[in-house]
Length: 79
Image 1 (spheres, rainbow, N blue to C red):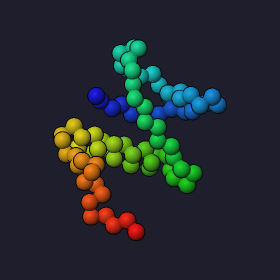
Image 2: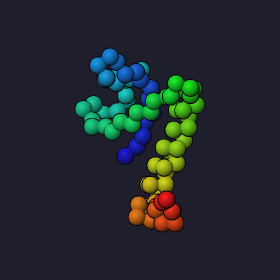
Image 3: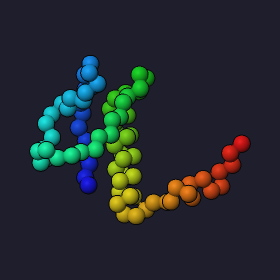
Image 4: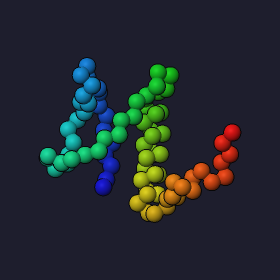
């Protein structure tokens, strides 16, 4: 899998329209992650932060640097 970052707009029907065409094989299935800026947050700031977070997570996942979800709760006290 590889990631491609593009920008777009959601229209009145809730459909995503990309600002430019994708340069990938036609009729390909894709997974889409939508990042929406909050009202008080600059769009570019959000995109840069989310992109870097995604890149780091993707790198970690592809290199086996992961933790089983069962271990994530160890040491956390729920009160």
